[in-house]
Length: 348
Image (cartoon, rainbow, N blue to C red; front, top):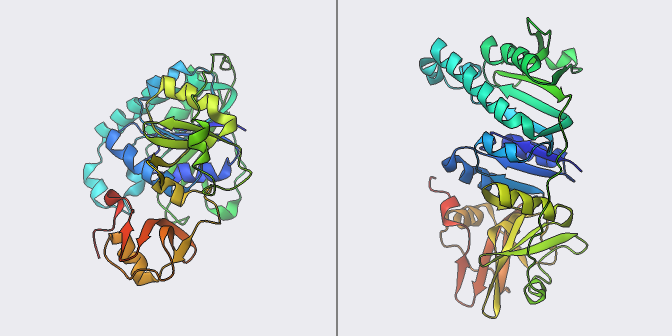
């Protein structure tokens, strides 16, 4: 198991890929911009894995975790020339001055985050820019100024990816051109850290939920999952037991927007399941569920009325074509729709 950081993560496409690849590892998915961090939480919640923490921090905040991460992915803010085909308006926003500004910002981000990478750890750096100042020049800067060694990758010619070489340190980078691949313009390079110290700080412990609170979860979760349950505000959260001290450490050092899966909240004699549980891979297959038609599923996602499912009552998982949509509570004369209001479909 490894500790992986996706630094500039919103909206979450890279993080979901990383979460799927590093299934037994801990993924910390960080978004610097507060408004975009909410989008990241939504998309990672929809992905359903419990081995994910979402943070909302500046890169310099991670310096407190010296030598902690095995892998850091920095998809750096850039001038965006690789997106000209998809978004022609990006051409009007591009300038040589912005390229220089982005290059300086990229260097600042990398300098701030590199202390958090352990010796032997891997850095994956990428942009959606064609400008050498943001790509090959950054590779030279990394190798020149830090204990970073470029990693050459084996890339099959059939993939259509163009290998580039930086002028000073002969570092290999990889350019993706829209006329050669299925996608937009992109640059990526990989590095290994050759010195430093592994993390030696103390890892605190989380306060566990009570036995009575944990007992409320019977029947809601897959059996056999090695989970740790904690109480946060009114909610019970589930995280892989192997990572409970790491989550406590991250909670102490960073601003967490999401950790593991929010299972739900005890309410008087009832238990109100959370939407994250509905989408989670942790959910029990024994949960009552109803497979909605396309028309009814869209009505559910819009929080509009649809026919009451027959022969059911109480908490029910709404699904469509095998996909988990969310909770509803079936009552004798109505259905209470618990799909998050802020996520509902607003357009036809």
